[in-house]
Length: 179
Image 1 (tube, rainbow, N blue to C red):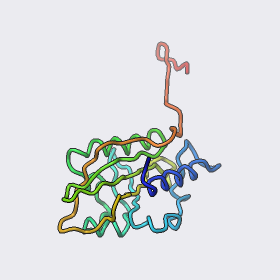
Image 2: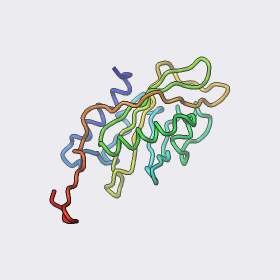
Image 3: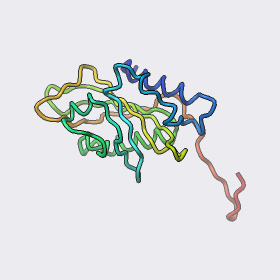
Image 4: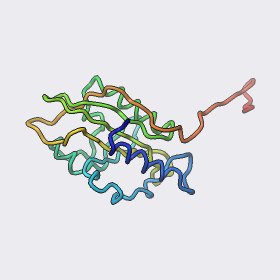
């Protein structure tokens, strides 16, 4: 069972993905309406996918307050401990590849540790390619700015729902594509 805010983003993204004009199970960035997020907006973010990395383009004010700096232009993985980077990058890649939200369960490295979830879901940019990621942090208690900016420790990543597109397959005989 996910945090209610995580479930909100999953349900909202799924609704966008089921709209008539969606290609490949991934909605367009233009279909996203920030006002739908309400009180969750300060913990939401958008990132561009560049060379297998997720670079934050927009981050809610709540996130920038907790991390004590503007986050635009930062790698998403800069918020995570070094041991968590691979899991976070794999979760984002899985969301894009499978056209569905992926949730990363995590905790902060500060005392007392704070449990939270980060959900990421793919979006299509102006190029119509799935090169954007919509995300939301859902803490179990309020995220507040401490003495130091927290680093996040990823515990597990879980895909939500069914893949939005079928697995790719290709069959060839003597260099000729047959399926």
